[in-house]
Length: 329
Image (cartoon, rainbow, N blue to C red):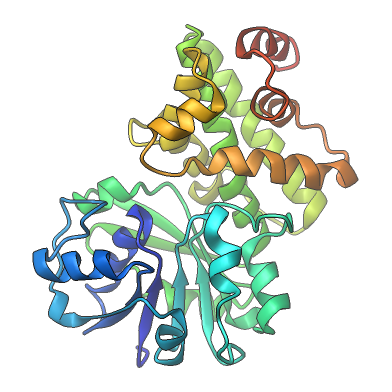
């Protein structure tokens, strides 16, 4: 389909996407920052840190720890770098990006900029909007490794491009849909992690299934209000790229954000929970980014506000959640 596809990132989601793409491409380029990780990957055929259930034919992978080399040798860049490290990594790129296709699989926003990833790439690298895409939907990396049936939504303002790129990710166990609502999908992907933290807290605080259902139904309403304020385009918020992603992140055993929230609800400090977790809980960073962005928009986001009080103003979870219960319907 394309001369060269590149994966940027080495975490579980990057690894899952590489597994998917390699079913449709003869070979790929893969940027992994640390050379020792590359060396072990080549020796074992597996990512030494993530998704040990996924094996790779490393003869079909061109690894590099030099992001500019990977960018120069690739036509399509699939970005799957955790948001806290994204800006510093992207800013190392010195190659012309204007003719690249860039598809963001990042579930967070650009640190210090409060921008979704596609907006930042468009402004920073002058990539045209028709060449910018986003991957969304209820799809945990761990289930991709096990080849369990999953669903992805590929977004691009140019619907024909979205449909073409979707073929990169279509496999017997991954179904794809397309959308032209890039910003809505990105904001939903960011915000659902905040609500998963809230769901984890409530579980640890012994709120039952009834309240969890109310919490997540109110969460999708918050996403719709905020996404509409940021980009008032037609969208079906009940589609799997929005609602499905909220549900799986709020309920799944594989959700690191839910796990992070559970730890906080059990009495861990934010720092202690972050130190114990092996992977980044994107919702922590998303809470600050959405809160800051909403200072201008003034959208009613009571769950986001409650998470901000707990995560950044260091308020106790129990009284904040109790107060939140009176604001939901």
